[in-house]
Image (tube, rainbow, N blue to C red; front, side, top):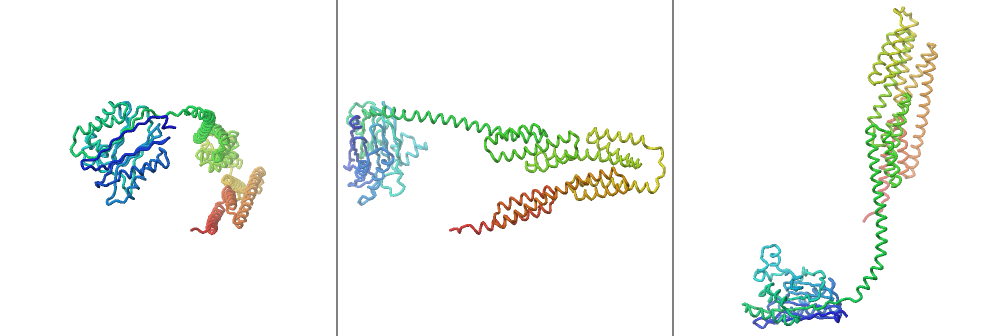
Length: 593
């Protein structure tokens, strides 16, 4: 059908050399849907050499078995031609150059091994030209040889791809080239291009009529008129493409394809836009979340916990929307830290210094799970609250000393409290210390009567009680509740012996508060021991993951109680657990190999 509705005209000439030896060959077959044109140039010197004919016959036969213009078909034709020469019975090894042209009357594709040339002329201009597979062609590409000197160069027939190669046969295969009406294709061997340059050949095609045989005769006449020395065999084949095939169903097929493709494209476009919008929105949320995360850290570093809380809450909301569990956990740790610091700040503003100090201690523990963020600020606040409490403790101690008529020591404590308050810019504490000093000076007598032994004993007891209270407060602040209880009990006993019910009652309150802390500590110890037992039970059952979880819980409780020996003990158990888990895993692994 394609051949009947197109017009391809072919003409050729092939002449022997002066010894009447012609090892060139041209052959073609034009089928209904595809056509094949093959030209070969024998590279052997035997009079009876048939390499070119064998190559052309093998290529045409292979094409005819499965007509197509695919790369696969072209490769099969070239390899069949090469195989034919390798398996031929001959006194010498057969070799040849070959050029195969396949067409479907709309497009063409050519394959080449050697230095046979192809030129496609369109409207008088060279539209396509092949490249020799020779050393000279490589030198031209490297600009070491001028293109117009190729026909005379000594390496023009030194080929790196040709028929007859038993190994590393790599022919060139072109892409498909679309044809147009009035195109002309020339196929010619070295007998032509060694004596007729490209310009002369181009002029011949420009002046050609509608008859390809006339063009062939004109080129042959031009060649012979030059009477070149050593003119050997030559072959020229010309293909006039007067009309290419036009598919009458092309528009209908395109219309059907468009009717199917356009709705799909619309759906895909809509889906792509939706997915892109969702993706961009997700990216935007992630950027906002990450920005909120970094802003949270920066505000913590700037000691602005109110703004840090706002940024952290927004980032956490975005992390929940994005279902980013890792970021939710990270932001959750920062949120707990911020809330603990803000609660301690509120206690500090309400002048509840002991509660504030406890809050900052909790914040210090929280900071470990938030990359130790804000530790400098928290430590400064802990030091500040400790100083605030020290100011009031000094004033209280001074009051006690003043009541016992130890005015010099009381004055020293008041002055110490005043100096400390001044250093930490604690105006309220400084004012209280100054008021205490003024009252002390008012109550002082010009001279003191000699104190008897009983008063001295009472003062000594009073000072001992104060020292017990001070040491107890220091131990309490450091979390050493057992030592604090001993000091408070000693203070209570001292004040009771003195008959000082108020101070004894105050010591009793501190003792009760300490007992509560000890009770809480005992509860935590029991909790930690329970976790340890659960971990051991899980380890005995070879459930190492659960065992490790309970060991971690136990270690955290001991760490909060500052029981470093227990923390070390749990750590050693976890290390032993990891070793045992590794050994069990290795023993249970299936054998390899």
